[in-house]
Amino acid sequence: MSFGFLHNKWFKFSLWGGLYLLWVIWLGNYWWLLGLAVIFDLYITKKVKWAFWRKRPEKGGKSNGWLEWLDALIFALVAATFIRMFFIEAYTIPTGSMEKTLLVGDYLFVSKVAYGPRVPETPISFPLVHNVMPITGGESYSEIIKNDYRRLKGFSNVKRDDIVVFGFPHGDTVLKALPQDDYYQLVRMNDNNREYTQKMYGPVIVRPNDKKDNYVKRCVAVAGDTLSVVNGNVFVNGVPQPEFEGLQSTYTVYTNGSAINPKILKEIGLTPQEVYFDPSLPGYPDMTLTKSELAKVKDLAVVAEIRENIDVYPPDYPDSPILLFPFTENFEWTRDNYGPIWVPAKGATVGLTLENLPLYQRIISAYEKNSLEVKDGEIYINGEKSDSYTFKQDYYFMMGDNRHHSLDSRYWGFVPEDHIVGKPAMLWFSTDKYESFPSNIRWNRLFKFL
Image (cartoon, rainbow, N blue to C red; front, side):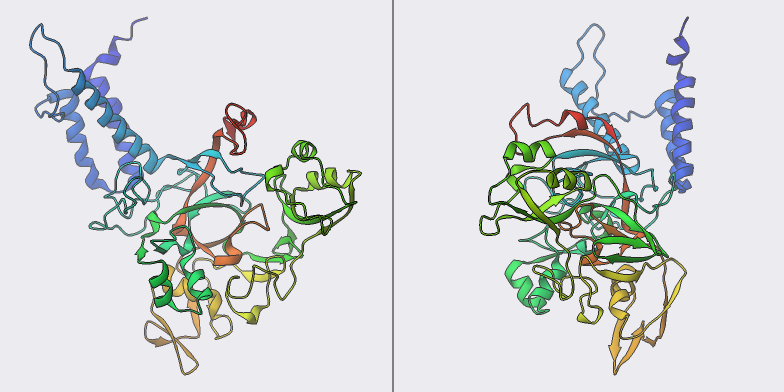
């Protein structure tokens, strides 16, 4: 069978032109149709030398190997940037907030088409770098050109219980000396003194939505839901959350005076280096376990008693009202007894009072770009006295599966729809930092679909 038509210039133009046309329709910006003229010239007329750096070798001469490598590198860079921007992007898991669902050292492919990719708000950016240059530490993007938020059509919307990658809501402002920390939390911990905080750890860097650091959590409630956490158990609209296999809590494990053999801990699924034994207890004051691991620990002869660590008001250290959203003592919430809290939905209107304003003030001012102030006990939005507010987009409530070791919506509130990045699609690699090569490779997690 002959496949000579694959080399036909009209076939090549039809193939690449058709794919490009579909992308333009998906993008919804028909000025990009001008690019069809470039594709036509590349394959049909060949009047313009688009690869200006490439020289054709003289008859009988050798081609320049360096220029061929440059040509291949430019093509790979453009293709990788395009794929990363609109289809799929690689991420790593740096913290244990989603263990045992996602582990520290997991490498993910995240699908952007799952919920629809965002059109870049800051299109001028160093290729394949998110927000910080790897060597200099400077910002990797320019805001000379800045687009409004727009999301292309995806396969679905964010659903309850999905694992979601999103931009950190409080990541619009970061401190140069502590870029991974929550700037607003540090300000509250310093008696709301912004000047002191910036003097100690600044200067501050202000980032657009698409350049915020990315987090991964489970969406436990979507727009319009009412969420409650009762003694560590999540309820949405009065219904208990499903028991996910990787869901964890912490327990105080009392023993007969002896520590559990590290080999046994490892067989159960725990990391011995992260399990602290307190001989004065005697036992483990903060052992993180899934339901299946809890059952195995209960069966150990050395274990005398197990109690789940449930935080009741007032919250135990390190939590406090200034750390838990909405950062006021009026709500008397803890990480394990939280809510009920309603998740705002696009088009919904909520009555505003001084009592519930802390729940919505960041949405009104930061996420939906309104001026907000309180004068003489009255609320003013964009200079007008207001007793209600209608939301412009959907919001989500995110929590980590490692419930007692996760900074999530309980600590910084709602996640706006325009912060959603994508959905983890596949684990392609995973390593254990406590093991040496090749034992550090978690072979059972390689190429695992999520």
